[in-house]
Every structure is written in structure tokens, then in C-alpha cells.
Length: 416
Image (cartoon, rainbow, N blue to C red; front, side, top):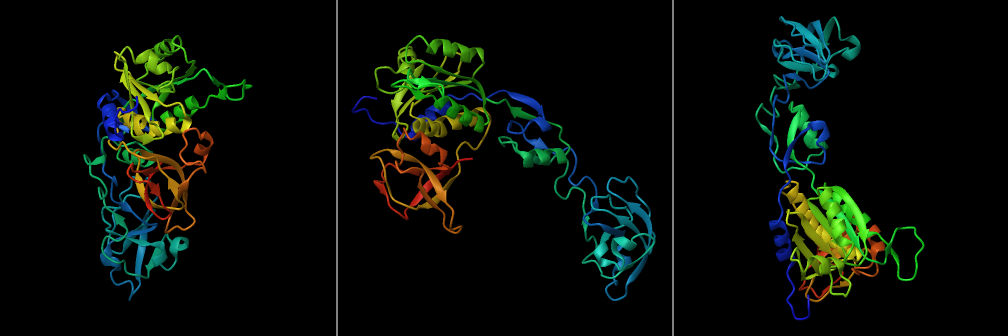
């Protein structure tokens, strides 16, 4: 990263990272334990949805021909059966007969239409014995849900690569699926470097600061659906990093995320330990913050991410490079955050020749016109860790834009 060396583009570095990713193994998991995992094989329906013809209303299962003229001449029907939800009965219905039926109950084979309670003289209060239907149903089959209207057995319910949430798992369960095939969660070790770092809350000597990056990055790892198997801090000397790496291997980490130790200073422990051996390459990327980056892998394939030590730089670098890699490892097909175009609510400066990732907030006071503003008055300074508490998006500004003016349309990378 010496002067005069051309900067690598964000896309070049990200492509290098993604090319090295190996997907996690496929495992079988019960649907009630699969939330937050990524589907490796499509889910197909075992049973139809709905499973059987059933009533969409509380009312009466009838033969349409018996009530076809009810709006002009009320139809008098005799209730010969009562069908609560879950009833296995299939009562025969002759001319002039009906069955009281509740929503979700199986339709009698002899009925083709449902008359809601509201369309009878007595409603629920007078629903057994003899009833008077006052309104003709809109058509034969009204308020009748047909078997397989939604899905037939064998239909795809959820496609591979989908993150399994409540909607997807609910649909799989409704289709009779008990077990799904998913990718194992990636296992990640987070190692924060710096002799100046002490535990939050400790008394600070001159030159010391609270260590926050490991907590920040561990949270981002978890948000990406991966598992944190190690979180530790090492000093800026050559003796601490190798034992931490050994602990990461013992924890079966698929990836190690370092913060700090990757820049051009005299005490860059990640660079001095893993650079000469060729396990990691270090480069400068045309982005701000997050210019210094390191990436590589151990002999066993464990991925190594070297992120800058300033908190905003670490957060941005994770979002741009580490998160897509973890999602790919987990089997996801959509690797990048959704992006909106939003007008700038104020102006701000941009770094020359580098893409800017600005921690920002959305102004939603006018629902028809959202605005984006910097999260802090200091803009995108990589040391502004406090501003991350307010940041809900990153405003992404191309390298060729010299300054963002108020009202200019800006790409906004959503988080969460």
C-alpha cells in the first residue's frame, strides 16, 4: 500500500474474497429448529394446501340449487348435522337439508356452497333445527375453499438459497414438511488487535482505549446468521497472534476476522505475522473508510479477513466484504443489501477518487419523500464510533462524485 500503487476497486477485492469461499456442509434440521438457516435444497409440499375442501366462513353447508332463489323467496332448510373444525363426519344432505359448519371444517361431499350466518334470519343464535336463508350466494361454490387451491403435493414451497424465517417455515409446516435440508451456520472467530485496548469499564491509563471492535464484529457476524466461536483480543506483538489462530482452529472456525494490524504502521501485527508467510495478502481498496484490507486463508482453507482497526472502517469493511462471504458460505443466493435511491437532506464532502460509505440516518418525516443525512456532524470519519449508534444505513457515493449537494439522489444501503 505504498504511494503510487493503484488502488484496487471494491468489486475486485470482493470478487477475490468470494472466489475463495467454500459452502458449509448440508445438514438435516427439523422445521421448528431451522429459523435463521439457509435452505440448501428446495422444499416440496407433502400434502396439498388446503388439505381438503373446507369452509371459508362460519355458516351452513348447502346445495346451491336449494338456495338459488333465496333473495326473492327465502329458502327453508333443515339442519341435519353440525361440523366443528376437525370433525371427520361427511353427512349426506338431501334436498332441503343443510349442515352447520365452522370455518376450516371439511365440506360435506353432498354440499357445494356455504351460506354465512349473516345471510340467514336467525344467524348463529338460531342455527340448529330449521333455518331461513335470506340471500342467494354470489355463485355456486361460494365460500368454499378447494383442495390444493394454493399448492398441490410435489409443488415447490420454498426455493433453495432462501433464508428461513417465520413465513417460510410456516408454509413448509402447512405443506406437511417435517425436516428441511440446510447449510450449517458458518463458524467465525473474531480477533481484535492492539496493545492500547482494554476491557470496557476498566480504568484507562494514558494511551489506552476501551476495546469495542470485537463486540461490534461479533454482533455483525451473528446478524449475518453465522456463529461466533471465539472472541478475543491480542497485543501488537508477534507472540500473541499465532496462539489466537490456534484457538480459532480448535474451535473449528471457517473464517477469522481480524480488526487492526493491517495498515502501513510499524506495529501491524496481522500484517507482520501473516504477510511474510503468504497466508494473507494486503492491499489498498478505493473506498472510504476501509482503504487498507487484508485477505487470505490458512492451509486448511480457513478464511482470513484483515479489517482496519478504526470502528467505522471495521463496520464498513465487514458489510462490504465479510458479510457477503458469510452469506455465500451459508448457501444464500442474494448476497448484498437492498439499495434505495434517496434524496440528500443536506450536503457533505466526499473523498477524492474513492467510493464513500457514509454512516447515515433516514429522515422519514415526509412519508412521500425520505431524506438521507450523515449520522454525525463529523461525516464518515473512521474513528467516529459513537456515530454508529445512530447509523441505520450507509449512503454509498461513487468515487467520481466530488461533493453531495442537498437534494441530490444518493444510493442508500439498507441494514437490518
